[in-house]
Every structure is written in C-alpha cells, then in structure tokens.
Length: 217
Image: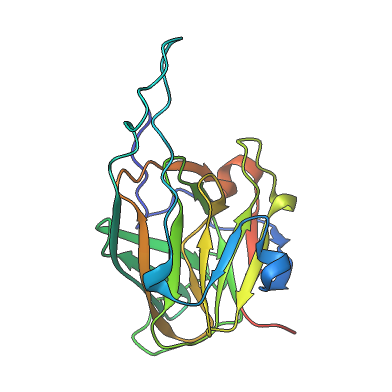
C-alpha cells in the first residue's frame, strides 16, 4: 500500500548535495515540449485523459473522461527560508522547498525573496493537464520534466515566466507547483478534478536537492 505523503513535513535528509537546474526563459519554443503559454485563462482548455481499460475490453467511447475540472487559487509565500503553498482547488497544503539546506532553514514572518528554491519533490497528473495564471502579473518559475516514470535530475528544467502570461502543462508532465520570484504570489489554478498524482521524492531517490534559480542571471 502506498502511504500518503506529508507535504508539510517532507521526508528528506537535513543536508544533501545540490543539483543545479537550468533556468530557461519561457517562450513558445521552450514551453512546447511541456505545454503552452496562456494569454486568456478563461480560454484555456484543460486536457482530460480517458480512464484506462483494465483488460482487453475497451472503455466505452464518451466515458471515463467525464470528471471535468476544478478551479481555485494557488497561494505561495516565503516565510523566511521556507516556501509554503496551498491549493484551494484540491485543498492541498505544502512545503515546496527551502532557500538553503533544511538543517539551516528558519521560518520567519518577515517577507523574503530568495534567489533559489531547493526542491525535494516532483509529481505529475496522469488524468489531466494544469494551468497556472499569475493574478498580479509578476514573474514566476515552474520546474518541469518530460513524461515517463524513469525521471532523472538532469531531465529537469525551470521555466521562467515574466508574468504577462500564464502556463499550461500537459497531462503526464513532471512539475512541482509554481514558485514566486517575489515574496508571495497568488495564481489562478485549473486542473483535472480526479487529481491523480504520481510522485518522486527526489531527495530520497537521487540523494540531491534540485537547485532551482528564481531569477535570470
């Protein structure tokens, strides 16, 4: 039986080597392998994947993809060295990462704007795509990797979005929430209602934290 992940108490070592993730400016070409940029969030269709057949008999046409979508606000906030997030769409709360090793990270009520996120976890949704649209038009970063369960740290890139448009990612694309390039940001989030999630604890599986920069050099 797969145990539920406690996203507010990540199961990670206190210190690990850092694997540098390349930061790529998001444009039509760089985003194409993972999804697309979004100009109008009201006009962003979410792909829903049909439920897979369990045997040789096929799923009836027009069924297995009727769950639709769910929408809410994805909140992000730096509390000292710790990046917190919550997703109203799926009632989720998370520690997305830290600006330094967890052993040295300190929480604070003072707003901060670190230059990196040390990322411990990635996931993908096999049942549907997901849209993030910045409500204040500020820059943000989304780490992504191509589909397939044989994930490697070197597959991960960080898409830097300037905040003028949102980002849509296809079903099956590895990602982890959305990172603000400011102390706090809110995003309009829309995704498949089923919300199946396949996870990888990068810290435990590969023995590294993914060092995701938040601003172009």
